[in-house]
Each structure stands twice: as C-alpha cells, then as structure tokens.
Length: 266
Image 1: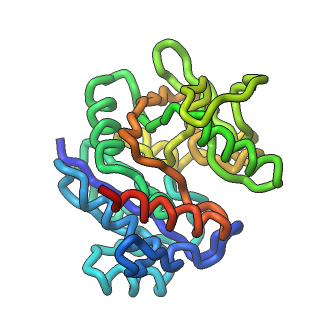
Image 2: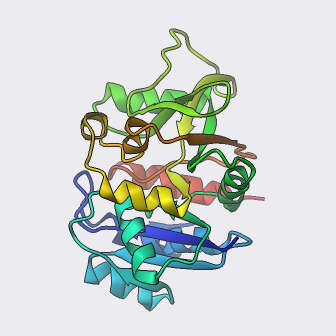
Image 3: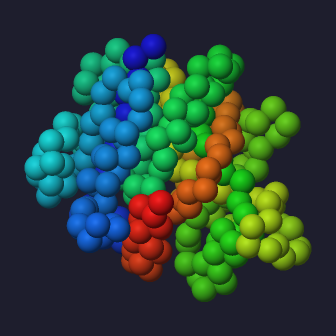
C-alpha cells in the first residue's frame, strides 16, 4: 500500500504571514526554517514511499528545493492544506493508497504519530480519513486554556465516540471539565494533532465540496468531512515524554524552540 506524505505550505497565512520560512533554533544553536523542520519530521517516518512539499509560493519552493525537497506547485486558490494535498496528488498522477497531510506548521510531530496514524487507517477499512489525537496532561490543558483567555487561537481539541469516530473538533477547549488538574494529571481533553491520512477517493471528493458553515466558523478544514457525513477515525497516540505544539502564532516560536532544546536532552 504505497504511502505519500504531502507537506502543504503557504506564505499568506492570516495569523502569521511567512510562517513556513520562520527560522527555529534548536539545541545545537543551528537555525532551520519551519518548512525544513517539517520536512525533517516527514523524512524520519519509516515505511513512507514519497515526500513532497506542496506550495503556491516561489519563496517557499526555492527554500524547499534548496535543502533537497521535492516540490509540487499548486494553485493559490487552495483554501486549506487538504485542498492543496488533493491538487498535489492529482498533479502527481495518483497511485497511492494512503495520502498523509503533514501540515507545514507541525515540526514537533514525532515519527510514531504518523506511523500509528497510517496503521490505524489500514486497520479500519470503514474509515475514510484518520487523524491523531493526544490526551492532554494538566500542563498542556493549562496552555490551551491560557491561549483562549488571552484571545489567541491556539491548539485544536477533539471529541469522539466509543468507536473513536470523530464527533467534533473545535478551537475552543472541549469538553468543558469545570476543574483544574496538576501538571502531570491525565485529563479528558484531547489535543488534535494537525495531521491527516486520507484514502484517495475521500481526498478527491473533499476538493469538490464547498465549505460548510462549521468549517467557515471554526476555520478547521476537517469539519468539511464531518459536515458531509464522512467517517473520520481519531487515532490516539502516545506522547512518550515528548511535548507537542504547532506554530500557530508568533508567540509560539519561543515555546517551540524551548521544546526543541528539551528534545535534545539525554
């Protein structure tokens, strides 16, 4: 079952223009762009047949080619990363049983998140799409709530049923718990990891559908699937001591650089 990873990246981000080319300094003191670190994360995954960067911007394309990435140019009219993945697959001519969308703002994504995601979709033939979720500890939940209190749109949370099919995703912190947790306490809130694995038919259908009201309100591309009744599997992944955060706002740079330094400690 050939697997393709697409890293969609655009320059004109509403919250953080030019985000893919932002430099992040790791523990060694070496600065690498966000798109480079996302590429490195994709290349660390075993069992992947091909990795491409999909963009509409020559600056991102030039930077990606500069470190050896394969680039697929896509239209500036793509509304989100899923649409960009769909166009990239069409341009490449298909031929993949699973397409993974590793968004270009998630350089801290561990390789096993993607491996577990692909395995989960393979093991559940009734699912058309799969996405990872990470149970939060008190420290992460506090960070999510702090972002909302300060008016920042930070991480996304997910709720799902007993069959692990997604019920909803939100930029609000759901479900409401009404209590506080110690930093290492397990909580009932799941952080949605912005990675997706699609079956090709679901990805192709997605690109043909217009945005629904929930997708427009929340600004979350995956809600288009839920609004169309598509089965979306939430695959719980384990942190294994690693912290995870996406680069959504300029304030996240310091947080991610701190996490990069911590990852390098013995």
